[in-house]
Length: 294
Image (cartoon, rainbow, N blue to C red; front, top):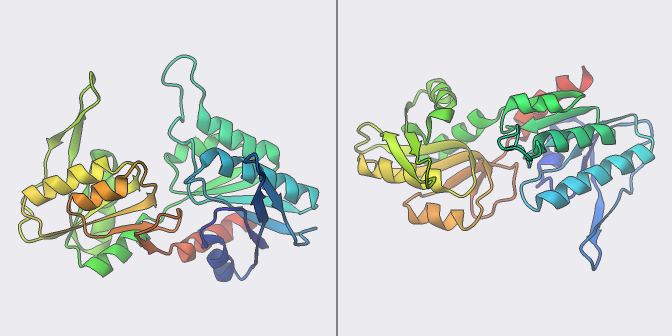
């Protein structure tokens, strides 16, 4: 097995290779003056099983195109099998048609990867596990939330986990029970006319408690800001936040910090700067090893 970082594996690929006892290398890459990507692999992969690692957390179109190019290069180099690990998969939100005329982008992306020559695919915390059915080869969703939350709790001494919406509350409850800490959740209401959010079910008394707000992904930060404000109003004395994927778009980092959040923790599925990264490579390698040999 050879693990190959494409252009955006954020160091995760090399750590996974170390845990799996596999060789690691990276594509050489550059950008042409017109913005197009160039890739080249200076490694002999003939007859080898190859795991390509590429996150799509930023410059999504570019990272996706580079993954397709990488698959083509590996196929041309006569590798035995081509596998993929996507630490963060873009275009996953549109996993069904909501309005007439829309594409199902998750199907487009996953279908293209398989059609290009990838036979197995692992995705860390996809938007919905069901969407992986659009990939016609074998696929697996890798859950690392407990690893991220455990690391954040150990570093902050958080006593209560807070789920910022009911959708993630079940997972947060399970993690809290395993770690032996308390938990609570918010229930949001969205105005159908203007899209604004309000709180339906609030939090209980948090007087003197250290809080960790937990979500699967932080994008614009609005949910974390709302949950942090509610926690402060209920007496919390220390608030930190944790999520598997840190996208932090459109000034989210500043908004979250201004809301009174101390540290923001996340996995190394993305390259977000200024945050506390929890390395999930050991858990990912443990999930990959049986999946890739099956």
